[in-house]
Image 1 (cartoon, rainbow, N blue to C red):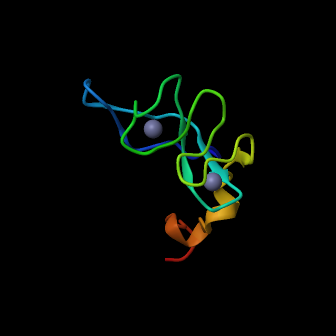
Image 2 (cartoon, rainbow, N blue to C red; image 1 turned 45 degrees about the vertical axis):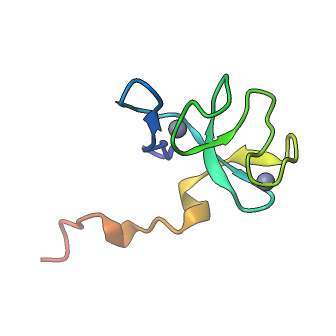
Length: 80
Ligand SMILES: [Zn+2]
Ligand SMILES: [Zn+2]
């Protein structure tokens, strides 16, 4: 798996969001939803407007490498 998923919850449903995460130029990280305030960790509206800075379209898909995910987090069968 190379895609980071949103671990927020959908308002009113108590379901794991599991949406793709995006990062704005301002640093805000969150998922994109079709309506405002749909997810507890929503970062962007359907139009791509950042909830933190208000800029539109300044976001990009968040890759694991960008947030410091490392191989050391995973068990390496060859270390023992
Ligand atoms: Zn979400
Ligand atoms: Zn922003």
